[in-house]
Amino acid sequence: MKNFKLESLPPKAELETTRVLNQLAAFPRALAELNDYANIIPDKKILINAITVNEAKDSSEIENIITTHDELYKAMRVSRKVVSSK
Picture 1 (spheres, rainbow, N blue to C red):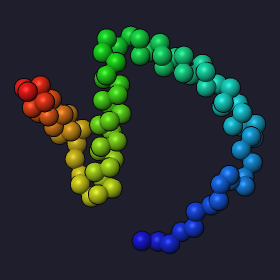
Picture 2 (picture 1 turned 90 degrees about the vertical axis):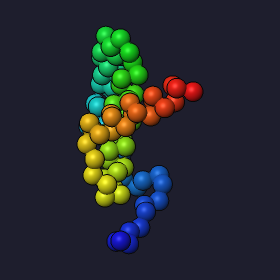
Picture 3 (picture 1 turned 180 degrees about the horizontal axis):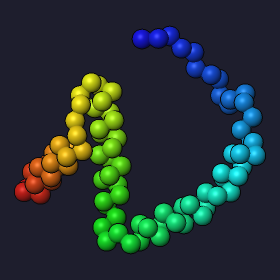
């Protein structure tokens, strides 16, 4: 493992640059657009599950466990059956 030093907070770099402020100004519009798309989806849990599955896949790769999205969705389906049978 490489040795590295964490920078102290707050960072010394200038954060309020024109580029950052322009992106910040576009944020409310992007958030509203995402909200519009989310309202189209009948079951909003689909969005949360997609984030969870991607995080689980990435975490597994860090631990050198290679899996696919298909395997993760199958595992989620099986665990739901076990939980719902109680």
